[in-house]
Length: 79
Image (tube, rainbow, N blue to C red):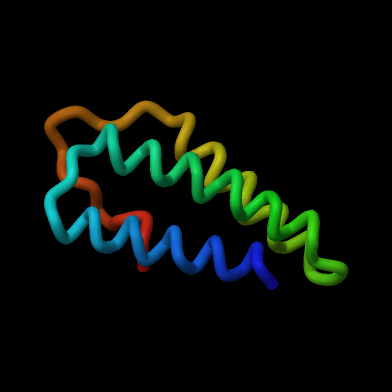
C-alpha cells in the first residue's frame, strides 16, 4: 500500500506544479519519478499486474517521445 500512496502523492505534486506553471523540464522529471514509483507499485501488487504493466509501458513511451515544439498539447498527463 505504500507504493500506491507514493503514486498518488506524486500525482498530486505534478498537478500542483502544473497549476503553478512549472517549466516542462521539471514536470518531466516528476513524471519520470512517477513512472519509477508506478513500476514499484506494479511489482508489489499480486493481481492486475498485466493491465498496470501495459499502462506503465504506455507512460514510458510517452515520456520517451519527443515533445512537440510550439504546439499546445491536446491533453495533459493528468486527467
